[in-house]
Image (cartoon, rainbow, N blue to C red):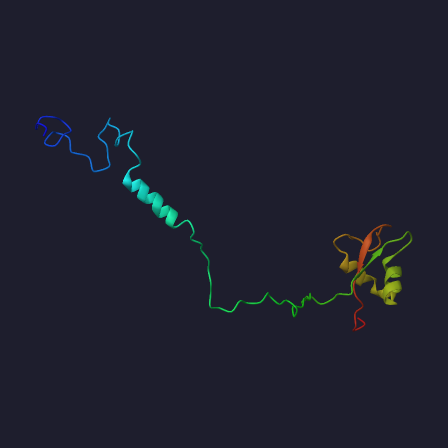
Length: 142
């Protein structure tokens, strides 16, 4: 047995390490010894589980693939069709001539003028190449 004043030994100043642990500066176990029994047991446990396979089974009936055979598509709009057309001004045209050609009445020129106020300041000043909006026929005949 060791004396009480020997550090790191039973009865000394440093606690004795837990089994399988080395003291600072000391190797763990005998370097020339065979593998420790705990390690051999771990290897044996690993070998016992080497043939283990995993899998998942269920009691549910497998669902068939998605059936998209009844799917239909369409496009619709809540906006009412306007029937608005466009007209490119030709040399010599007047709003009255354009109204006569589209509405059958030259007096409807103001409808074309009002529909194109964003680009017309004067009904008598239309230019060849301008593209004018021609509003849909008015069913009331106004």
